[in-house]
Length: 156
Length: 156
Image (cartoon, rainbow over all chains, first blue to last red; front, side):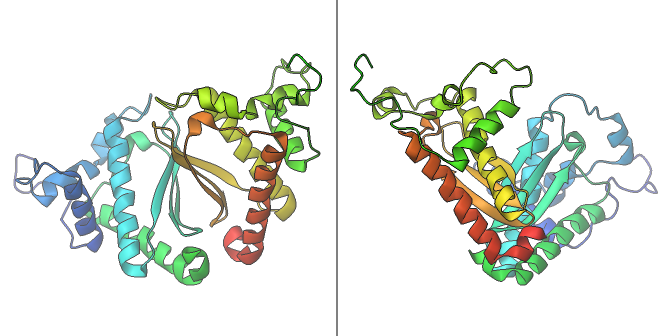
């Protein structure tokens, strides 16, 4: 990134309710105000993994706790945005296997509003801000649609 | 248990499809046939915790892996019996906290057919065979009813 013509890491920043929610989730974890001086982009940049970075990441051994933390915040943000849009609170559950695959679900009442099977958890991240935002928005949209389809189960 | 008049540990054995399923689940784990000579009661007796035993069990520290194993088999058996009676396969997910509380769910399609918040996982067990059987049967019955109430979600 020595020249001004080179694209910034993660590409262009996008306006996104999901990214805003993700920042809020991360800031809520900062109980001692240690990140007060950090910008939103500072806080989110660990969610960006470029193609080059991805290639260099080993997928052997247990995923690092930081990766699990990041993944959990991502789905926390999805859950909170689902709640804002549907009124249904969604709880997260994870089954993670040591090899880096697993499953994350968000449950509202008796309805599984998000169900995601994961591979390569070691490399959880998105190439661009646009892709990060899009991935979150899509999970939220699908969850809200499912709640509209099965409102009684979501409130059971 | 020196005298014949004393009640056996776990009280009287009961006929129960759930106990049969639980035995089958445990035997399926025995890939090397090490338990071939064990009776069904031998295999199930670790699910019995008498009042006296319960009192002596510490609830400090992480639950032992054997307790988690036992708990998982219990809900595996619930899931398999739900599948036999409803045709819907249910997958187990657990969130266990170190202090011995947690949550277990069984998910069929997009429906949470069993949702159980647990406390004192350290002492997971039942006073009598009748109570063990009853606990399993009740979870199965409730799950099947829920699937009948929300069949589309269970197949989604």
